[in-house]
Image (cartoon, rainbow over all chains, first blue to last red; front, side):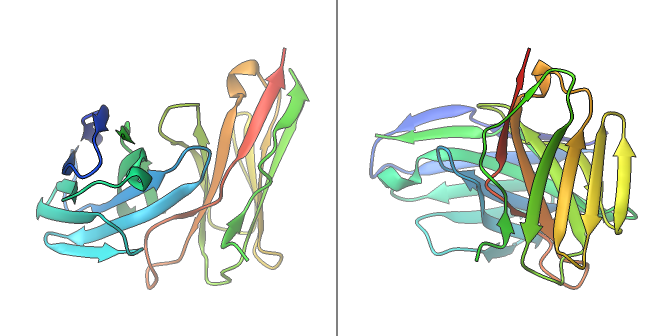
Length: 114
Length: 113
């Protein structure tokens, strides 16, 4: 069965520091990968999605970047964090099949920028 | 107009009652529809998906889709306190469109014992 791992689970970072969140998927190949962010009390905002290695689409202009160095690895980064980057970050994967494009989420990473 | 709209709630129902959660979407090209449940502090988990007009049942859950009205709903029968969570509606286009899900802000459900 497919599993998705995301880390770290929580982190507290000072303003201006770098960020790296990592996500890996097991049990599938060539998945679509996604990074979502959920601010406190808000809905899920799509940040990036990727349909293949090195292929990254950005949904909104922001202080973040994403990379996909391997088929099942997705990394979210920032060179200098802002207070507004605080939130719950979720990696997700999907594969097109007869049921459509169902998305499954990792456990999430809580980021607090102080 | 938001792409996916949900009443934020809270929707409060007594234990054993039917909870009805509603969602409207603006993109007529949308073809796939999903309901996720999110407990406080946790990531969303998929409850069910629906692609065709009509009803789809899975245990205590029934999803209803009306593409002409751009409306999708989730019914939870015999509601339990453990169903208390935020329910997220999500939509996506078909194969030719953007594959990511667009989420509503969610409806908070409270099931009173």
